Length: 276
Image (cartoon, rainbow, N blue to C red; front, side):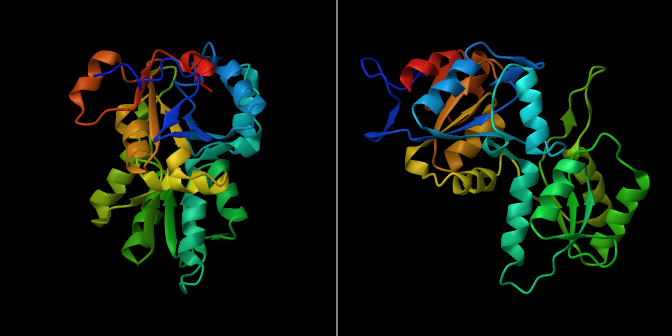
């Protein structure tokens, strides 16, 4: 496999003769690692700003609001405005808003999640309630409640549509892996026989909603990620130019085990600066 697209002699990343105009990038493992900025990340973001590139930082984490995440990135040494952050909670709220508009569906939702999800749903016009909701929306939280999960199961069996922000089965903690949205979704599915519709990566729906936010087109948009099984496959299915960086989950010797390939493989985002 080629290490990268053949861009030698050309300082910009091109795709089908068109320069990349918009950039989507994962956050953890690409821009930050264990709350420290990846070398070259700050310079890449500044390069996007200096060249007027439209960009969004994407994350499957639905716990935090964009304001929270902007503050976290700032503490890591990266200045990313909150309007340049797109979470699975925002993508889920946008998806549900589109489902409701003009369809006759109600806008009542029972949620399991944190401020990132509840804020996004409120701002999308949803009423959060456990009384006859139209949707049960499952997101990330560090305090999953047996009572809340039981309520979700009963509401889904009563006819509420089951939505999950992301499929991640586990999340990191200082003491090791902990159950995440995908694991709790599996529990609810086992109890109800209902599979959730999952909005976050690897569903390309999340990328399409992100592109709508910045008026981007797939022909001139690139996705940077550190995981073949989420970032790269979703970017490919959304029709984007894909860039795998080796500062996160997927390592070079693992790429060959997948039946698809990214357009570029780079050691880190530092290698992209001179191509933009």
